[in-house]
Image (cartoon, rainbow, N blue to C red):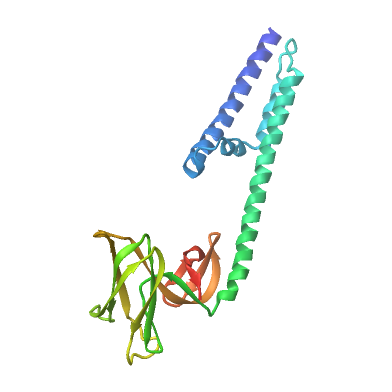
Amino acid sequence: MTTSSSATTQSSTNAAIFASINANAKAAATTGASASGGSSSAAMAAVSPSTFLTLLVTQMQNQDPLSPMDNSQMTSQLAQINTVSGINTLNTSVQSLNTQLVQMQALQAATLVGQNVTVPGNDLTIKGGSGQGAFKLAGAADSVTVQVLDPSGQVVANQSLGAMPAGVQGISWPAGTLADASPGYTFKVAATQGGAAVPTTALMLDKVNSVFTSNGVLTLDLQNSGNVPYTSVQSLN
């Protein structure tokens, strides 16, 4: 009777602990599925080594004296503890490495303060009697046209640039007597190939006021565009 009672206690206790572990693992698996395709490593990492130790000690305390845990079982469970500990340590190391990498990038990017960069946008930079801008063609085009608009949105000039290859292309508009850095002048680009529209991305010059990190992302504070991620920079000028 004692043996039966002990076995019953062991069974119910282990079942409760396994239920707790499974609940944690399922929750981690659900989170992992949305973040990285349902990695099983996330489920294991969510079960702490102390939980495994609790299970192991409970099993040993309540095991059936006539059928004790064999060495292979204990070795297997200890191996699981080491696996989970290793995953947790690796996750911590990777997070620390990522933080250090972003900090190094921020230090390097600090040299951009006060410099001009090319980023997505359609503002024209007026300097020396010329309006400067750029655009990126997703593919070759046999016809490219540019419209220049004043601060009120009225078209003040049209340029036909003809055929152009894919890639980044420059714009130079004769600005006449406009003062340098005159604000509000913008441009629009239309490109076609065989009558079909070719996707374009307007690009503009902007000045870097400061550099900072936000949620682990290196970000530039630009004079006209505000805060943009460093990855948006097309070129350094």
